[in-house]
Length: 106
Image (cartoon, rainbow, N blue to C red; front, side, top):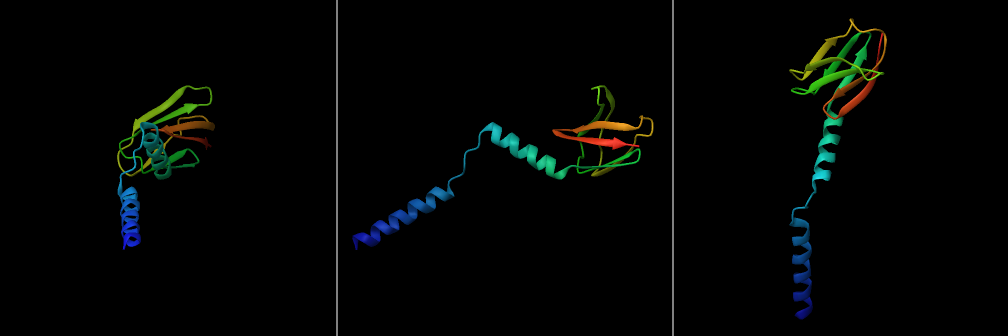
C-alpha cells in the first residue's frame, strides 16, 4: 500500500513540474522574437525591384556598403514591391526591424 502511495505522489510531482510555466528572461524573449521575425520576413531582389513579404507595419531601410542610408519607408501590407531603379547597380544592405540582408541590384 505504501509503495503505491509513493508512486502516486511521485507521479503527481512529476506532472506538476511539467505543468508549471517556464520562466523566460528578457534576452530569451527578444531572441525568440528576432527568430520569429527573421523566419517570417522575406526579401527578394529582382533587377532593380525589391519584393518584401510579411513585414507589415515595419520600416525598411536600405544602406549602401559605405553605410549611407539611401532609402527608407514604412511597409504597409503583407507584400510590397519597391522600385529602386534610381539607385546605382551594386550591393546594398536591407534592414527591416532586426532582419538584415545583403542584396544585389542590377
